[in-house]
Structures are given as structure tokens and as C-alpha cells.
Image (tube, rainbow, N blue to C red):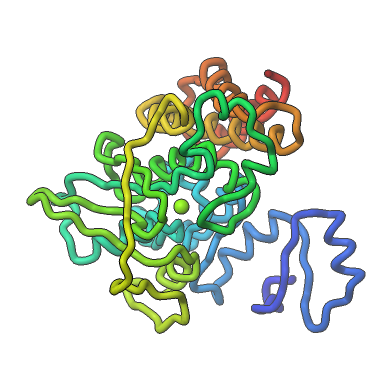
Length: 337
Ligand code: MG
């Protein structure tokens, strides 16, 4: 029974090949476990208070679900948990009293702006986006984007998948879905805005016309620590703004014709229950295929759109239905062009 011996320096890996390599490395005093099922059990252990979930993609859904089921605080950096199964996750939070605290910098900003405010006094959320490296590209330039160009993000240092998602702005689309579920707001009340400096992490406007924003240099340490310590704050050696220095903060509307992924994501919110799961799975496959140089950059939204047209069904949301539609979408999105 591993669960009684597991300790904070232990490690779980889901890649069988790497598991063998790690085992062979004989790391001092680190136990190594293998398999997603171990993670799914691990997050429910009594000795665990907080689960910080930063898995990438739909793989992160079940650990979030299980941790909430066990009444844990989940510090959520896996946005797909809410994107694909928002209804299941929020029902679970409401019924178990578990806590779901966002780590995503925009949602952390929203939460920080909402502390002490009555929820029904929110008029609108303005979610900021850097606009990625292609915000000034012409439609013509957009059609010739290479993998190397897309992997360079101007402000944030992140993994490959999310860097591509930032450049297509699908990341913002997924974050709008995430905000919809986290704060129980209709999509009409969530507005994306391009803010190239990534200093204002999001804005909440209230019914009296007052807006609150959370600002700071782009640094993921801040939202991570906030999610662990909320509603308190910890002393942190992070970069500071120098507000005495002359500088400009600029804001632009989103050009949906250049970034169709944002619109696609906003539309699935009021679509059928499984539509966000289709959007997410199709996007994961399309991004991977782009990184493998199988498809062009502008094919990413096309594959997502075709998958939504072909696969959207009226089946109601359940864990099993999510797993099924995820698999079906991945197969479909892998073979279309
Ligand atoms: Mg974000």
C-alpha cells in the first residue's frame, strides 16, 4: 500500500518510458510511482490539504475532479478542467464545500478584484490578452507562420502548447470559458481586450461604473502563491512595478477575423454541453499537428471549427461522456485537413 508511505519529495510520472529511466537514475530518497491512476488516488489522500494542478490538457480533468470530491482546496492551473467539464466541476464545488482557486493570472486578478464585493454587483469582466506575437500581422502574414515564430511569446515564458494557444488567442477563448464557470457569469459579461504590456492582468467593472484592476509585472509566482494562501498574502521576492517611471499601458479591441479561435470558444459556451470538450480536444490535436509540421498555422482554427460542426451532439454531460467525446474528437481531428 503506497498511500501510507508517500511523502512530499515523491514523484509520479505517467510516461512509461521515462519511468524506467527515472527508476534507473536511483534518485536519493525519492520514491517514484507511475500512472495517471496513482495521481487520481494521490489527490484524495487525507494528509493532502491543497492540490496544485498544473497538468496540461484534458489529462488534468480527473485529478481536479477527484480532489474536489475529497473536499480539497484545488489551486487550478489546468484550465481544461473547467473548460471541458465546467458544469460537473462547479456542481461538485457547490455540493462538497471544496475550494477551487484559480492560478491562471487573469482569473487570479479577477478574484483579487472581487474580494469584499457582492457578486451580484458585477457588471462586466474585462479579460486582458497580450495578443501574442502576431497581433500586428496582416492576414497575409498570418498564413505563413512557422513553428519557430509561433513559439516565441513576447511577455510570458510558458510551455509549447500554451504558447501556441496564446498566439492563436485560443488561450483567451479557453480563459473566457474558464471565467464563465469560475464566476458564474454569462459570456455576454466577459469581454476580451488586447493589452500588449501584460501589466493589467484583468479588470472587473461594477454596477456603479467603477472598475477595479489587478496589476503587476508578468510573473506566475504571484498568482501561484496567492492561490495557496488566499485570502492572505505572503511576502514575495517578485519584481515590482516602478510607478514613478514614465510608461504607457495600452488597450485595443480584439480583431476576431484574425483570431477566429476566440469567437469559436465564446460560441461553445451557450452551445450543447459537450461542445467545449470538442473545442478543447480538437485544438489540442491541431496544435500538436502544427508543432509536428503536419498542418499550417491557419489550419488550427479550421480543424476546430470542422470538429465542432461534425461532432456536436446533445448527449448530456458526465465523466464517461466527456471521456468518449474527447477520444472521438481526437480521432476525427487527427485525420482531417
Ligand atoms: Mg492566463
